[in-house]
Length: 160
Image (cartoon, rainbow, N blue to C red; front, side, top):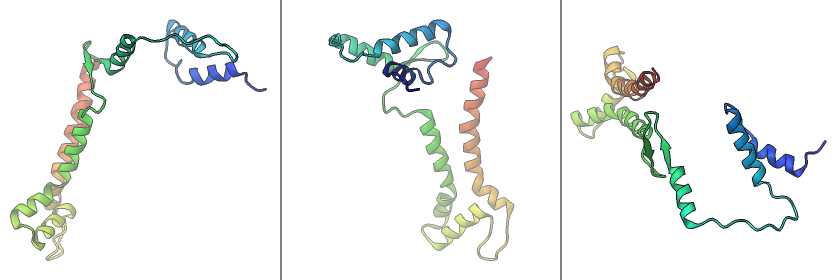
């Protein structure tokens, strides 16, 4: 059995929007979906929207509610904390290379030192050392714990 144009429109408009809503919210969503359907052959012109209404609707989209009750405005291309944390973790991966370069300059010894810190294996004599491995990975592990752990703890504290 094929769906009518109206049924197809309503199915498309309501998909995924009803879950977790109250009865009043569902009714409003359904009314908006039904209103957006334009029957074929209807020559009723669309109402013009004033510039002031357009500006208000854009401001509403950009402004959002904070969990603490205030309002927060975020620019479209905002630099949020998740991006900052991501770049901190990437930078912490380069710390062993920077340490080797600061000790030995741009040389083969700097590359050997960075390899030793990343893998724990000394290239000169082939021995493995947990201490050098920990020395190389501690900045990344610490940064990851801080950038993932602290926001999770803050969410848990806020939920109480």
